[in-house]
Image (tube, rainbow, N blue to C red; front, side, top):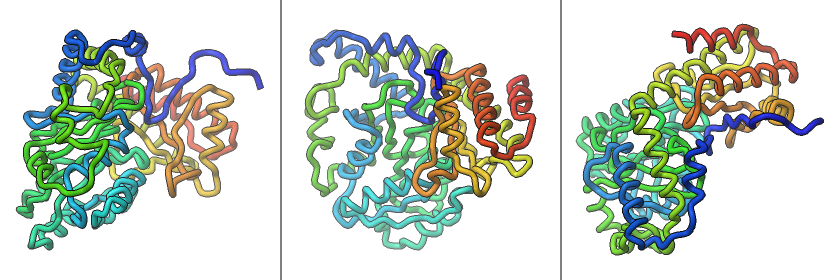
Amino acid sequence: MFPPRGRHFFANPGPTNIPDSILLATAHASVDFNDPAFFAVYEAGRAGLRRVLRQEGGELFFYTASGHGAWDATLVNLFSPGDRLLMIASGYFSDAWAAMAARLGLVVETIAADPRRGAEIAAIEKALRADTKGTIRAVCAVHNETSTGLCLPLPAIRAAIDAARHPALFLVDTISSLGSFDFRMSEWGVDAAVGGSQKGLMLPAGMSFTAVSERAMAAHREAGLTRGYFDWTVMLGRPHKSFMGTVPVTFFYGLRESLRLIEEEGLENVFARHHRLAGAVRAAVRAWSGNHGPALYCLNPERLSDSVTTILMPDGFDAEAVRTIARERFNVSLGGGLGALGGKVFRIGHLGDLNEAMVMGTLAAVELSLQRAAIPHGTGALDAAVAALAV
């Protein structure tokens, strides 16, 4: 086997491709994070991220951590031992969030869901109405479940909470949705939004954040879980109102460039591009599904993700064979199945710094890999993708 030539195609659903201009921006010399010149960059990054979040009021806390760290920070800052949470099941990441909450001493009730269709909104409202004493402290939702390629309708969940007249906080994981498709924190009544640097924001992995409403900040002041590294009260007393210790300055030079690229394109245009590229991927998968081939994992057309497509293999065929051939023969990296979906699905990420040619190249490599692995599939996938993009 010869070493791969040409540019590596990274089609994972996170981390994502980092634009050259962001790479150059992060290659910045060390500076004092209390220097007024850096502080201006930092404050501009905070303000710009609030615009992407569409956050009005409240606080925004940054951490040197992955998205899992932001989950931890959000839970320990908002709740007390024994508090009840209502977790909307969506797949691997909602399960992981629920397990973390349980380890912290919280009581988690799960709204079960068909993983290929998503939770019923009526079931959420029913659970909240049944809680007549208002002991459920929060409803938790993963906006975009990266493992299944399924997104949840946040306005409908907010409406269910309101219809039940329930006082629960509304917590949302936006890690693989923010900057890729529509999210409106304040308008949708989200009380805490967890996000990360490495997906729609097109930055390296390693920084995460929580945007917090005024109502959630009031809950924080009453929360009783033990806090150490992640303590919003301590953070608010620091000059940057975030971080415990050294501020990772290079991320903010990168964030400044990321925000410039997003705002140059226009947030609505970013969303439209993601939807367009996702449509091409889905058109190709629908073509492959002929002849009993690989098919869309998500069966609910209204909940298909615009940032990742999860593709279910035919019975008896291993998704890892496709991923291995794509990586080793064609220099294309695809996402693998997570948890119970390991070996059963592969995933194509279509978020961040991406265009039509990159999507078509990835789809061509996948089709070549399906052929080399002798996996049954329908024909015409590339033509279907071209037709979707030509509209």
